[in-house]
Length: 184
Image (cartoon, rainbow, N blue to C red; front, side, top):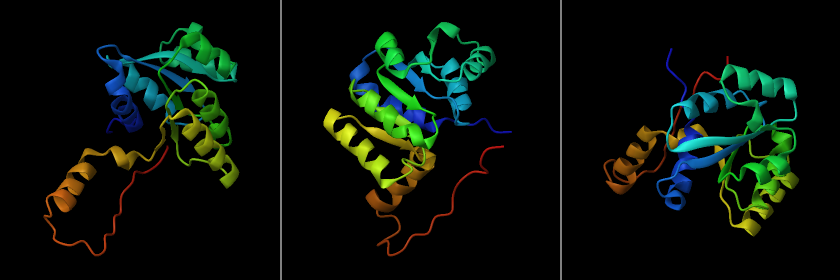
């Protein structure tokens, strides 16, 4: 079975790379209820360009499960988001909350000028989407929604061939069928 790539991590690293120099990105995770959180933990384990400094999750049992499964010290887990952000001083936040909590996480991160990546969808309502937009614009931070195909290297290469290299001539219509089999 192919190993899942938590591709948004790479997007976050690219987004923050110019600010970091040689130091690894100090990354915080907000929420563990979305299934892609485990892929993030697996990917972080062997990376030298990012370091997990804090995890916010209100469910202590879920905290303990992740700490044990991924050999992460329980000391980096918090039940209070603001306290985690203040204590650990991350440089970016990856959110794996339920969609209803996206605006709250962005507002907390934006108050500290921290970029945020979240899983799709962005919001549960236009009201939540506008709150995210307002917080991000006011703080001047990027908010990235993990639409994983955005980060696929083959999509960038295809775009370069078609758009920049004009390999296909004028594009009048394009239909793409892509994706993955979803969570198990």
